[in-house]
Image (tube, rainbow, N blue to C red; front, side, top):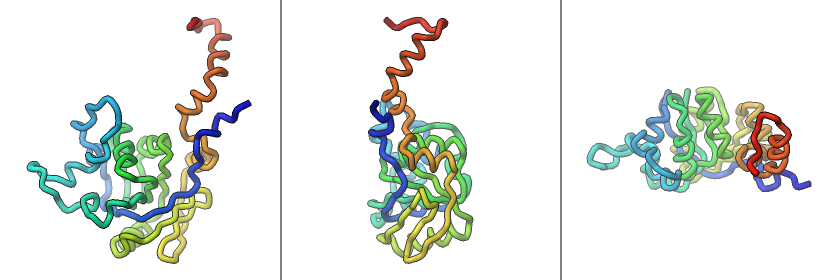
Length: 207
């Protein structure tokens, strides 16, 4: 029998340079304004990430790390408390992923946002305020510096230091075991799902 997780990569380790996005309670409308959600697919959402924080009404650039040349190749974002609060829109992590973000380190995350990140294979790992603040400052001082996020071991390594972080148990298991993509799991198990459905007297056959 084919392993249903064989085509779903495990996400137990992410490595790359960082980008600091400071501020508590950054909600999903700040991450991706609602007017950019009128799309058929998520393609192209990356360019609109943090749009209203990055540009004024005349589309002039404002001071924001997503506008800085030194962070354009970054893939590990460091944020503060209650990141991703607000609505449940999945467009928010979609926009971040399509901008290039592979992992997010922060003080805390809105539960639904973290769940939407998990569905994309993006780890959301947490650390206390002092630890997060120190990491953000280090990234500012070392924009090309390497950051290693070990989801399995729950550690982050940067600048020769290793810090302990926390990963929600269910999220860690899903990422490490490669069963975070529920859509792919359902497709891989479609025969079993069809057989189960056909066996239920209250489900009409699709044939």
